[in-house]
Amino acid sequence: MNSNARAYLLLTMTALCWGGNAVLGRLAVGEISPMLLVSARWLGVLILIGFFANRYIRTDWRILRRHLPYVGAMGALGLTAFNALFYVAAYTTTAINIGIIQGAIPVFVLIGAFLAYRTKITLMQLSGVLLTMLGVAFVASKGTLERLATLSISQGDGLMVIACALYAGYVVGLFKRPAVSSMALFTAVAGSAFLASIPLVAVEATLGRLQWPSYAGWVIVALVTLFPSFLAQIFFIRGVELIGPGRAGIFVNLVPVFASILAVALIGESFERFHAIALGAVLGGIWLSERGKLK
Image (cartoon, rainbow, N blue to C red; front, side, top):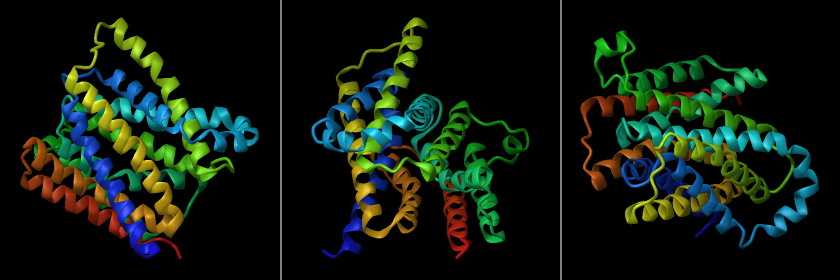
């Protein structure tokens, strides 16, 4: 298998893992409380990374420690806050909605890059932004013009929009990442995410909402840790190494597609006409944004 084919396979598997996270988020409802799931997820990742990441940390520690506040903020906002809102949103919206709204992340990244670095946006990219946001608004309003006109959307869909904006901020932050290996950076960010999750678990317990995992909850923790958190990150890092970040980023567009397919196939969610329209708008908007990139 040549390098392109390997990259395509790895990046497709990455999108499949991230799409599956939407289904796992829905399955976690009633099996484990959301903040405990976030904390357990990143603790599990640290345990898995610990088997082979030590040499990367030792090599890059002198550079990495100078950027710990920056890396810590990335982990806290881009991973902990994103995942916390993601799993809370799963209580009041569907996995299909979660997946489709996640499709807006590349557009949020485009907007964030413009705000942070004044990256130029072409007319075609702007058209893509508007089309994608229309798709997100359409799925959040369930295709009802009355709900759209009054901005009446479910709490879960609203939380997912905020979560996507936070994750986009994390991606934009990677533009100024410290000059260390990807594995060292991922280890530091995952460690920051775990530390930032501890106060959230404490608040959850104080409010009497902490739910220890059931048997199914433990299975969900294991799956979330292994696939979307660990393997997907490794696959993505390797895919980027093989074909570069620009080409690799396009595969993120498959996340809402896989999320929709898995939600229908595995947990029996209904794929409505407004889902199809919204998914088409989101993917079409991303396509326009990609086509409109400055050369």
